[in-house]
Length: 505
Image (cartoon, rainbow, N blue to C red):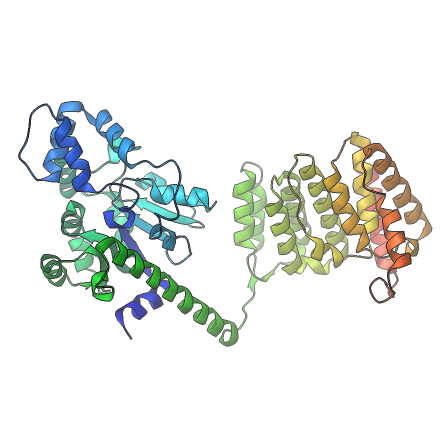
């Protein structure tokens, strides 16, 4: 197995901790030499020093810490991510690297994740790490950046203090390296970070039996020697792409490695699918009660993350907790503010044990329709939220829709046409209205018609549309042979009664 194949396997298993150097963002942000050259021109006294750390120290001594941070922000902060220049950072978008370390001070990774709407937790201090939830990708800025002056490690004194006192981030890194491989990416001998970083990490690497790797931005005999002395396997992109310049060779190698990792991950997932036995987990009463308690104080985003974590995969719920879990879903539906949350919750409800309890299922389907109605009032696009899940209760959709329409009338809401379009899809896939018992039929027709008239919408009455579809479409494409069960009739009557009592209360 080649060194790249080995790395790709480690990446597919999420066993790599990457450490990004200046080369990983060289096409977007200036490197050390460029920055310190600009600093030298700004100094009142000329200096012959070529030591980047010493030059940075002179700049801070003359202009102060705040001005140093302002200088870094001026040259390192990008307002938007450019895909053409960011070919290397794009390789970090996937899930191969749950945790990314960097000694860079730019905002390249942050701007990329913002552009592609990927959640990212940026960690500068131990306190940041304690707040992290481990559910999203993490970027650990090992030497801080211009937004955190107290954590910035950029000048000679900064490095001396870091070497003398250490940092809580060293402990976090050491814990990550207990079970993961270290991969330096984009460093060269001209990068002062590499020299200092090797010194910082030598105690950590020395106590870790796992190998470390370095994908160089610009290789040299001196770099090879340093890697050999510290047990680091050097990977030189120019050896793979000898006719290209350093930047192009480095970029090509990173893209190739990313592609290989993706291929390895697909093979791993295929193997797991056909060779791993499905395991169901059981949610304990204590875990379920804790989630209900947290719902009293936490945001919808926090609640949803906790719900997703607790009930991920096929989760068995104790029977005496069915009502409690159903109430949790009701609460999340009430507070959902995006269609993605509603759609995800609908999918979760379909894989939990709760689906076996028909009356709770119908109750939560009503909650979902109500949440969709409320979301439509905010002007958001609805997409195809929960249509598949609603079809699993297709004998009951008309009555559920009628209850929501009753809610609209009583609140005198002017719901937009997008909701009526959605409701038409729901009722179109429902059991023919005429098969309902008379009392439910009268209730549904009156409530839907009243809300539809009040809406002044160009969309036709969903019940009228259903009748037309049944009349003109073939029996094969639109026919329900199964009649509504007595149990469902009973549940729907309970739901209508519950809804009336709730409004009266």
